Amino acid sequence: MNDKWMLLQEKAEALSVRERVIIFATGLIFIIILWLQLFFSSWEVKHEAANQSLLLAESDLAELKADIHTLEAKLQQNPNDPLQAENNELEEHFNELGEEIREQLAHLMPPSQMAQTMQEVLADYKGLTLVSARNLPVERLALGSSEDEGNGDDAESLDREDTSEAGAVIYSHGFQMTLEGGYFQALQFLQGLEEMKGFYWHALDYQVEDYPKGILTIELNTLSLEEEWIGV
Image (cartoon, rainbow, N blue to C red; front, side):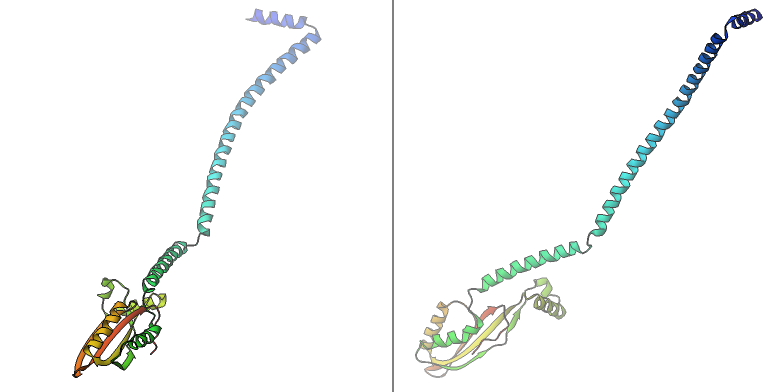
């Protein structure tokens, strides 16, 4: 071993200064390159780990932003929107129902024309005398279901208040006429009324008080959305 070391020492001493410098510089460069490789290899691993952590943080940040946008959208929504939509749907249904009712009532005689029409019809029949003509109390027709009607007076009162506020109320207007005349004249008059349209029969009574004359009492009804009295 000593011989080999002595041989190397002799070869080194035999080298010129320039050759020694070149050998020393080459060795130093090799050491530096080796050190750099080890340093940059470790740095590259750390850099890759840092990049992965950064990408993961960016992904979490994107999810957090999406959650924030979703929350902001929910906060901007009006909690009353579903109720308002339901209310609008009910109002639309109510308006459609009101239009159907108006179409059904369109063929009926308006209450304001009932008295005048009856007088004009009576003028065509001789032998009949008008004793009296009067309006009957206006009646509000219940539009609720049978279940509501069975809940008693309180339910009926509430139903009336609700329908009155909504405007979906049908009124029955009654008109009563009392005539005096013979049986056959009264019969012809009734047959003429039967051929007419626009009202409903409610009551009929004929009594003979002074033969051959008798008293004919009839009650007719028409329907309306208005609570106005029939003009007499």
